[in-house]
Length: 68
Image (cartoon, rainbow, N blue to C red; front, side, top):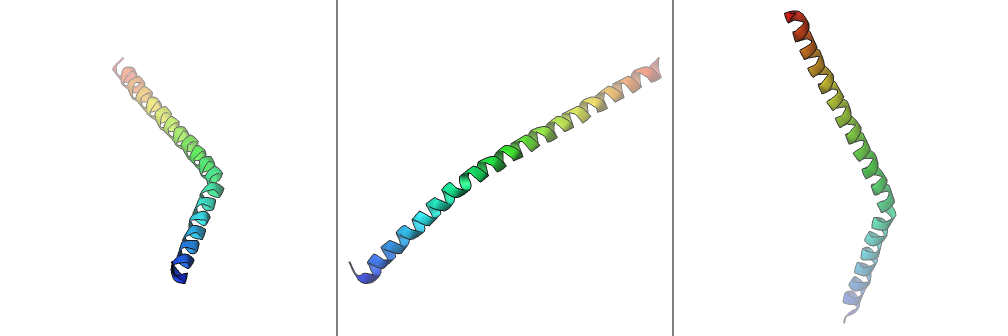
């Protein structure tokens, strides 16, 4: 094995260690972000559902009052 090949192998291992370290360091933050995004999406869907139900209720209640 030549000097440059062994040097490349060492540098490659260092790079792999840095990538693995970065993955483990960022993992808890990613989980927190995912949880917050999921909660925000659920809240947004709940708001949309509530507005839709109110819209349907108002449409039907307006139709009944005008025909009576």
